[in-house]
Image (cartoon, rainbow, N blue to C red):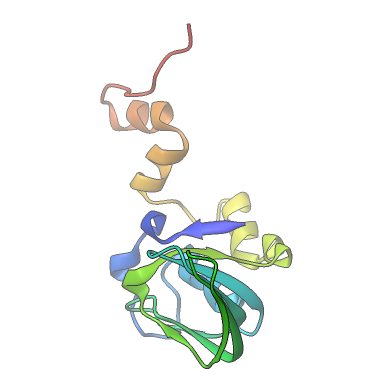
Amino acid sequence: MSLRVAEIDNAEQATTSAKPTSIVFATLKDAVGQRVSIETADCSTYTGVLADVDARYMNARFAGKVLIKRKDGFVEVSRDVLLPGRGIKLFVLPKEMRQAAFFQAIASGEWKLSKTAQKKRNPKAAAKAAGGPSLALKKK
């Protein structure tokens, strides 16, 4: 499972408070202490145990050994890596995270998706709800 940072809803509202305001941020907080992979904008992949995720800037910090695979095929092992949020392209979470409480909350309707996320999931229904024209392509 991967979460693209560009698709984070309510990212501007995320603060450093203990209460998460974004589904994505709350899910990443649940992933702390688990083995995750992060792909950066320069196509490098960092794999290790996630130690912390910053709520404001989405910086990710790994603790212990981190396996780094570069675009050119170079592989190295480093310790205690901090990745700035602006350079993170996507997070790859473990399969166990599919059962995370926040995904269950989305399914039950407790969390509502932002208008942007609704348009990405179902542009026709979002346009109809907004009263505007649909930009979805029709099948022939």
